[in-house]
Length: 142
Image (cartoon, rainbow, N blue to C red):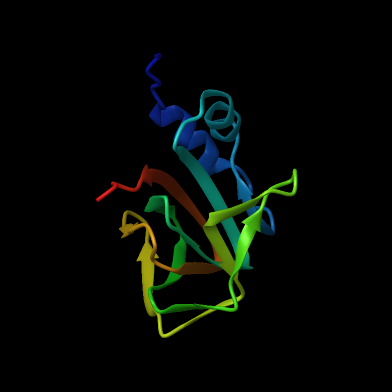
């Protein structure tokens, strides 16, 4: 099993990319993560409000690399639906919705970290551009 080093130069190059409206995973890490099944990516959000979601099988660890982003965490996922894969299979481990009721708002600034445990609803939005490292951590079976 190979090890992977993500050099600061790669992160700096992704941070220097011009912003694009919407939500996107940044290259070259996106391709490397897909090819090597890495639990790490860099997400860019520009003037976007993402759907709410909850994953029961993994936690999220976020690092705000640049900009500001507001998360709504906890509470209750409203009218959630299970994720449907491209092949039509349903994944009950991941749920999506348009909103969360009763969550707590948390704003991240450059350098801030946020851990969202498995099973906790969350949603994030950015006014302007935020670049975020996301690390997926498998849930520990109890």
